Image (tube, rainbow, N blue to C red; front, side):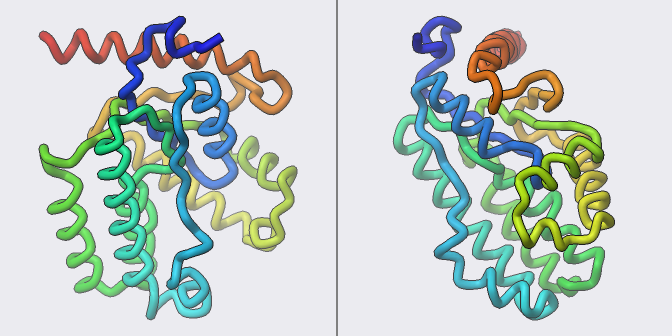
Length: 223
C-alpha cells in the first residue's frame, strides 16, 4: 500500500532528516522514501575533493570543506525543487552552519575571518525568502547512551576509534541547535519509539504523524 495516498501527503513534499551521527538518518530516509514512493537525496562523500585533506589538516582545510558542502547542498536543494519535490533528504543544509562550521570556529580550526565569510555566504544563499526550504525537517533524537550503543553496533572503524568526548559534544551541539532552529517546521521523533530494522511496519505510525503535522502546519499558515 502507498502510505502517501492513504495519509494524503502531497506528492510534491520535501522532507529532510536531521540528527547526530549514528542516530539512524539513512535508515529513516530509505524507509520513508519506500513508504511514500519518494526519491532519496544522500550526501555525496566519495566525490568530495577536500575530505581526505581535511582529516589530515583541520586548520587548513575546514573552510574549504564547508564551502564545498554549502555549494553542493545548495545545488541539490535547487535540483530537488526544480524536479517538483517528492524527496526524502538525508541531512539538511542547516546543520553545516549550525553544527559543523560553528564547531570549527569555536575550536579554533577555522579562523574568524573565514567563519564570517562562510556565515555571510550561507545567510545570503539560504536564509532568504527565495531559498526553497523543506516542507518539514524530521529531527531524530535520543539519549547519548542510545546513540553510543548504535555506533558500537554498526561497527565502523573510524567511529569506534573516535573518543566518547567527541560524541558527547556532538550530541550537545545538536540539541542546542534544534532548540533554536526555525527555518522550517520541525517534527521530533525519539529513536526509542520505533524500530525500522526489526519491524518495517513501524514506519506507518510515523507517516501518520507526518501527515497530521503537515496538515496542522498548513492550517496555521492560513491563519
